[in-house]
Image 1 (cartoon, one colour):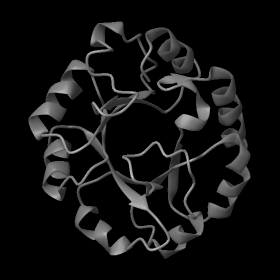
Image 2 (cartoon, helix red, strand yellow; image 1 turned 45 degrees about the vertical axis):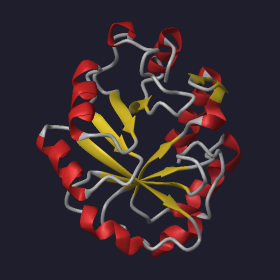
Image 3 (cartoon, helix red, strand yellow; image 1 turned 45 degrees about the horizontal axis):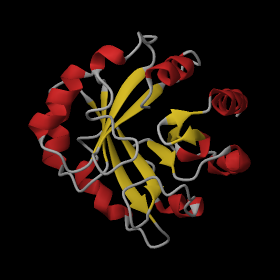
Length: 201
């Protein structure tokens, strides 16, 4: 999310989470573009997620206080120690892993005690935002010990495939580029349709 009036529109749909990207190489970067005072009041049930890539603990904590973030999504090579530090400061932690057909799920083990959820995204050359779906059948190799969030190319066209994940420890779906009018501006009509569909699953 990047534009105050659009944030207001999407917040009216009462999503579980709204994401704000603190990564200067991203087209959706909020640093220097969105001030905390620009944010509308949100339903207390809607949590604010800050997305960071290989940032320091001090920077993440500072931004979390300024923007009243509830949750931190770590999209780089962050250590389990950093995850633990953030949790000790009252923040929930999503740790992102980029998945392809050859992903080794054993790399998750050091993080299991220090994250709230894993987020599985499509592996690409850039950091996230590929708009492409990875092979979800790979998730059958995951032990399902920690709930996970599904990301990567999710659209209204592949919603039916989510039903194939029944029985897995799927916590939520993370949508982005497929529901955008432009980078950082989400389509409220499409998101309303998505919410309706997910309520039926």
